[in-house]
Image 1 (cartoon, helix red, strand yellow):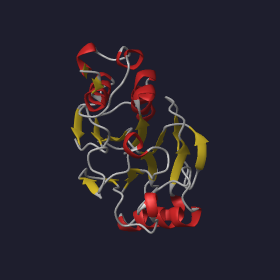
Image 2 (cartoon, helix red, strand yellow):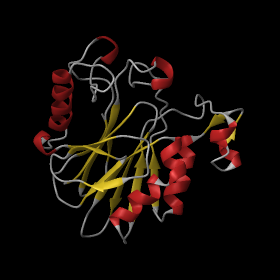
Image 3 (cartoon, one colour):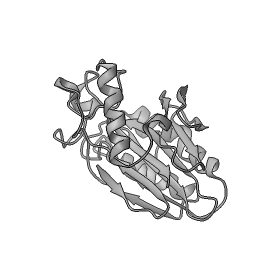
Image 4 (cartoon, one colour):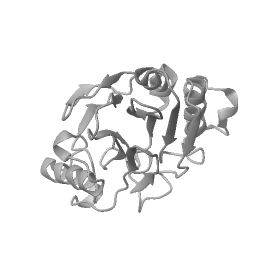
Length: 227
């Protein structure tokens, strides 16, 4: 796991290492939506929560649909269509899954503490999922971290996608999602933005990648909670 050291919160980006799935899903795959065995996936989710000393039975996540929708999470809520979750309740782990898209965590620095996690690809970014996540947390000093995703080295897009973003973010037909997300966070009022600039397509030993492997693969993600 790749940890974000933010006082008052538990935030980590999972890798594909440390689970029980095999084959193209090896090993810490967090979804059964691409064909993995459901029991293996649940064990992987449990192991991820255990590694963070968070209660697996309270784990919440969406049915991700590349939207700007952000829900308030209840303990253990699962499957509502959307691409973001937030909570101000301690020890409710929130999961946003990704396999090239951006996993993002946003935190409110002062009391009452609150956290949001987002899944953001080009569609979600262009439609405002970052602003929706910031709005859900309300006023206050905010910080964010952008996790591993497909990088500007590899993310080839057509003009219909590149045209949705600042022109300088696409170079030689490749879109810089990392910088697009950082700009969206700052524009929404996030004061401090950190990035984990690791390309999911470039590191097959660490990450699943849809662009590299197609649909038959797993996902990693970000898990975040108020401590």
